[in-house]
Amino acid sequence: MLHTILNLAKKHFPFLVLLCVAGFLYLYNHTGSLQPWDEAWYGAITQNMIKSNNPFVLEYNQHPFYDHPPFGFQLKALSMLVLGRSTLAIRLPEIVAGLLALVALYRTGTTVSSKWAGVWAGIILLTSRWFLFRARLGNLDILLVTTQLWTVTALFEMLSKKRRSMRSQTTISLLRNHAWFVLMFFFLSLSILSKALISLQLVPLVTLAGLYYIYTHKLDLKSVTVLILSAVVALIGPLLPWIVANSLVDSTEFIETLKTIGLRSNTTKAIRIEYIQTVVTYTRAAMHTWFKIGAITILISLPLLLIKKHRATFFFLLVYVFLAFAPYLISEKTEIWHLLPGIAALSLLIGVALDVSIAVISKKCQKILSVFLPQISKHITVLLKVGLSLSILTIATLNIKNYWSEFLHVYQYPSDYEKITWHIPYKNKPLYTTTDAYFPGLVFYANLDNQPVLYFSDSEDLQVCQEMIAANTPLQIVSRYGDWVMDRLGDTYLISREGDLVLTVLSPEVCKEYVVTK
Image (cartoon, rainbow, N blue to C red):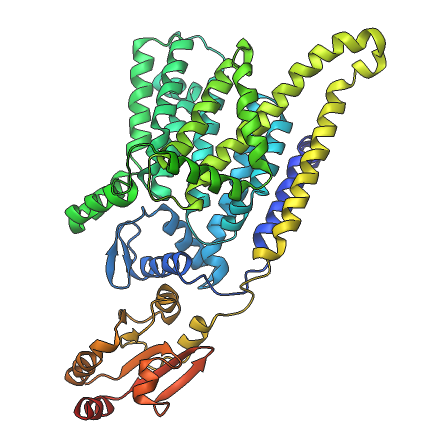
């Protein structure tokens, strides 16, 4: 047993080193608070999932939440149940997903070329600025990237399988022999469940790959029927509980949100030059030095299509890269993190293209060097791979050095919006706030008992006070120090101050005095 483990460690040593480095970068310094918008937003939704014991219908601040599917929140809920209500608990699923993304790249690279293709692809993705940044946060982007990568991993595993005899196969043996075909659609389903319907962008890729697989393996009608039905079940099955459960709550709003948020129908236009420029600019900023290498690699991949042995590999890789970026070439609203699936696809293409190029160049060089330098000709492939590996490591190290302090040393301490919630006296009463800058952070850290956090402006103060008087309930307000609340009330009723945030509590009697005075 130990001997087997040592042999595996030796065989995959470069990749294991990469995983250890990635684990350190992902896990370093999570002592601060969740960031006030998406992270805390998702944390609050996860909190509500645990309270409601409903893993399919999401809720935020006492309202249904349809913007994203539940898979990522389910993973965060499991993490929170194990680790408790903490920053790391919300971020851990993305951290694990970040590691699994590297595993997917390594496996795919090894399948289509060699282990070095997977290692290089992993290094490139890990040291791309925005991938590393988001892998350390509790958003949903890295889970989306990882499930898409595993869809592609299953695709290339499927295509790498040799044709088997189809004689007298049972349904079970048929599915076992063609398991990667079904798994490809299952991972696609998980990808849709991870963040949004945007993963439907991969449907043309898996459809083409599936048809190519059926054609090249010359499957009979029975086998094709079984595989297609199994693929449909693998794709639709995981989605059904989410779709049915939310349709029963409010089918109209649910479907409308799927269209506008999931399919980005409200921002999708015709392709325009400024949209292309935005994608290029953001990709360059997200990948840093790797962007230029990626652009060159796309050009290198085109002649590699002419090599019969690698034709299918580069055809599907190039289609994958195109489809990963395609939705944003026709969208007027693109954020830099939207491009992470494309960056992962480009990283894989770079790794594979470099490895295959070395193999092609080595073969040509060996013929020439065998005449003049026969000793070197035997080792030309190793020399080229060592040289390329050192170059990639140098670029990766410089990238990490450039933005190490940019995000790894921030958010070390509890934030003001977390600390102010420590002093909230009534957890069973609503909390009002006059600032929306930290709104999701207040929702998450206040963790009220079935009560909302509500925003109100300076023109609504009398109305809110009258509501508190009618309900005989104290008014709890989080506001910025020096805003209109302090101007009108002073610090007489101030409970706590943290940085520029203050917590003020007015009893119903004080609310009455305030209304009368105004």
